[in-house]
Length: 228
Image (cartoon, rainbow, N blue to C red; front, side, top):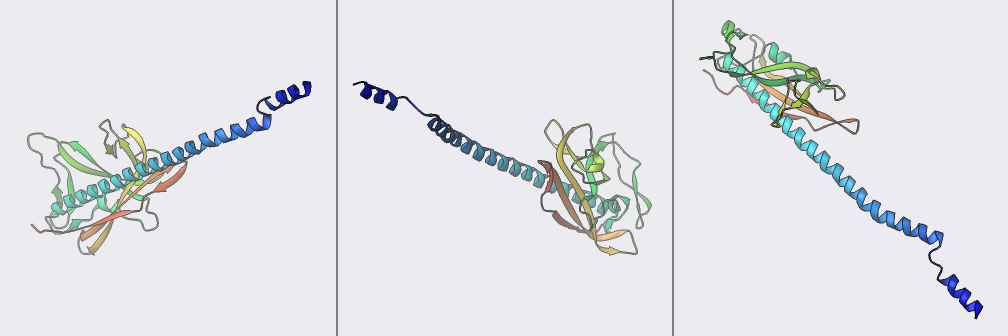
């Protein structure tokens, strides 16, 4: 009778240490597995969001470049795209796609700006505001992409409270993105400072887990489309 009771007590004594550890391991696998999958998916979502933003910035940069070339085309009275310091400063460097310009829009009433043009004499007026109103003008500054640094010279993209992405205003919130715009002249007429067209290139870089990443270069072409 005593032996039977002892065996019953031994049989129903509960989990052993090994059984407990196995149970904990199974529980951890059940928890860590979904968490890992969730973390991986979250990283993929974040990367997709960054790439979408980068493509938006590249397209926006191309449009700014086109607007700049249109401005120069108008200044030449339709004879071609003016190739002055503003375009040469942003010239494409085949050995380093990270070099070019930041291009941004400023607002101001400026009436004495001019650009040299062989076709129109020494100086063609850029801005002719009336009534003291604000005009949108394009500015550019040379930069070299450095995702570890911040500043206009490093092609930094900033963000205002809208939120809207802007370059050229370091007083705004700094983002992780760096955008560089460059121009490559097409059918250059060596006898004048004009070109029939230009290829515009936009490159966007950013830092991800301490590593530099980028989207493929986005390009477009702009040609002289009319004559005054």
